[in-house]
Length: 364
Image 1: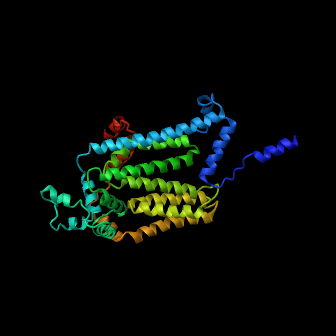
Image 2 (image 1 turned 45 degrees about the vertical axis):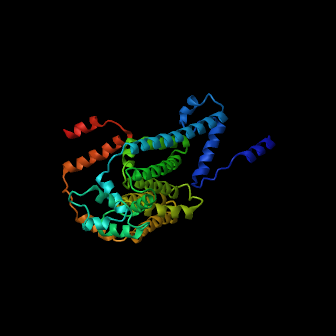
Image 3 (image 1 turned 180 degrees about the vertical axis):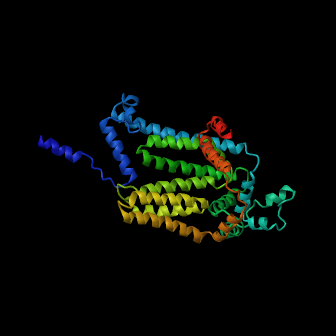
């Protein structure tokens, strides 16, 4: 009896919970296989996969994950390519994105012979969609600081993209396709950390790939797909840093990535500062009493990202002043409920649901 107990102790896997995602997931999968449970289905695992042996259940679980991820990649990419094939025009904001990305924003805003406020031959617009100079990142950032209200990162990325492929109706959407693939992968990692299982995480990636609202946004040359990518990365890294079970093994690397994710998101859209504020509150709530040093490290990483934004984007103060000086509608209760309606409608649009039943009571 003593010998058996000793052998059992030697072969039993030991789990050191240190906040590391992959090691925790491996332990969950191992325990599920030993006990005959399906970690993807909770209590229902015994009825759905309970007819299979533990080893077969594990293989079936992995196969389902691979199948769902492959479906997300193939179907999501196919739907976006189909949208590109049927794209025969540009939204006004898209046209300005290409004007900015090719280094012509300054000339366009000053009106120095540019096609603004008057009918001109199409060739004059097309001339604004060809890069003025290859990889002229400084000019693009300087023009945005002088005349625009947006940060420069997406336009710099779009500039490098069209410098290689040229400007066409599908140039921006094709770039967004690859950004959406990266966002789906990041969502899979984030959801796997939250659910501690790859199967529901794969379903999250599938919903993202097939969402009509995401596909509509991806079909235009705008910064919002890049915005979503940095938002997912920021939340994922913040959850790793704020894990109460302990710091990650590569603590400095994770903190550096959190800094870059913060800077990247701020250099894509300034309104991300609201998400940074929420992240700071999350770090304070989860870590201040448990590990105040790690809490300060998380806060320092986010502040460093904000400082990088200020240093990297010229004219950022002028951009904020320009935005404040622009026309703003006065506050009203009706306008407030219109914004609530639009926010709720975006959720229905994301899942492709009919929202007529929801909008009718508000319209009354």
